[in-house]
Image 1 (tube, helix red, strand yellow):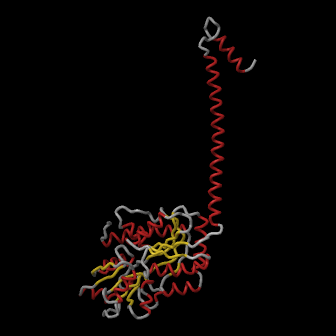
Image 2 (tube, rainbow, N blue to C red; image 1 turned 180 degrees about the vertical axis):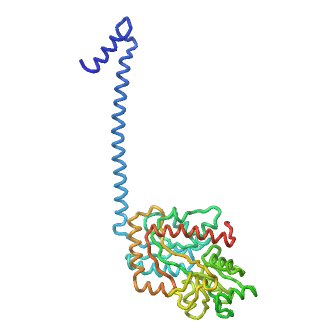
Image 3 (cartoon, rainbow, N blue to C red; image 1 turned 90 degrees about the horizontal axis):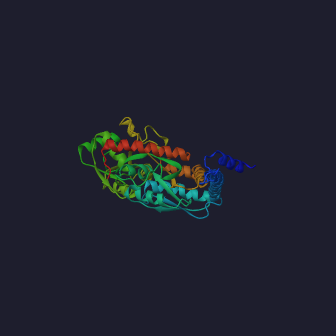
Length: 367
């Protein structure tokens, strides 16, 4: 007797029906329910096996695609967004690195200046670009962190919304004055500002030169009229022309003019003496503890294949070690610093914390 017949026999024998079996065929329904349950379990097992195979296949496919994406990359020119105007320190350093990196990777890095709103315009374009490896942004302290901190409703997160390639520069600030101003030191500038009205130029609200200058005035207990310009180039030009009296701006924006005798450098923002700055003294010699510099590095749209990011980072490292690049960056009093993607991400995160403190200290408000 089969198991099924045995179960049916026991059902007929054990019921109290005068017919000798259940007239409603409960035994049959019990058997059918068990068979259905067994079939359901088998189908679930098969579905899970198929789903697992599908996920594995998808993962393998994604990894294969990412690896294939870097094969033969780059196959065409790469757009390099610069969130600042031509002639700014950001533009200068981006072109130094970009021109030589083009030779290393065998494709041109095409500069696309997208200035506006303190760098926000360029950062938003980069965020929304296709993550195919053909959009790079030369990000900075101001465009990536200061701009976000001065927005009531930030439109991007510099830590989470991008893939980070590497930092490539530490951008110290240099305190410069027009040569006609009777000032030859940081102390003399402070004293003069306390005795007569002066103008301070910046590359715009929220720029590195704005924050560094405002922070300097705060700790020096002095005041000057802040005159924001549309970019670092016009800002420096205003001091060259005597329209503004001083600015504390990234070294790359002014060192050419300082070396030519067109501007006088009276201090720099690094915490101590620096070989890059030559005979320019540290502002910290006059204001103990003063230390405010920026950074610059490459980011890409979120979702860019990791092999592409690593390929570009390797090219950046090779570029930074070229003698020509070292010479050009030194002439801009800029330290070259190449790290990992994760190290760069941490630099950005720390920069957000530091600049939040500076913004609070000088009383700037989000708009």
